[in-house]
Image 1: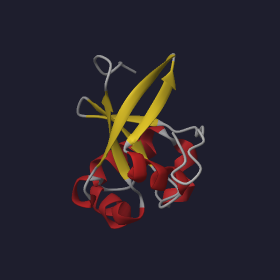
Image 2: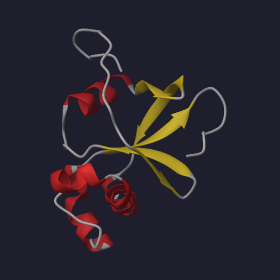
Image 3: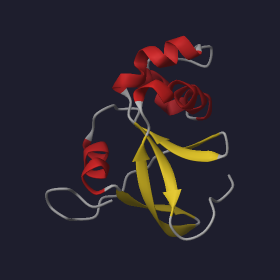
Image 4: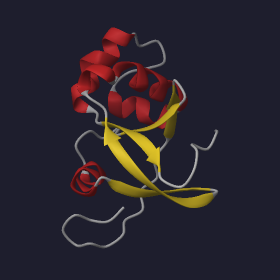
Length: 115
């Protein structure tokens, strides 16, 4: 993604989380630079086998809990940052949802790849 101030490209390693047939990015670090850059541009590139241009749509806080729950299941490295483990309930995930932005991935060039 491009930096909002410098315009330079930045590479960030993130876990793609699948939920109900869609793909999402969860910010385990909360409000961080990649989140601010995405909010400024709404675009990014995903490199997973091949480079694909995507739009990222922020998920409202009230809809984040089940996505965060799936994220902590598939991303063990994110658990300490979110402060929840695999036994977390939806209520636990809702409690932290306002601190962890979630973005739905909208692929511009064809269907969503399966993972």
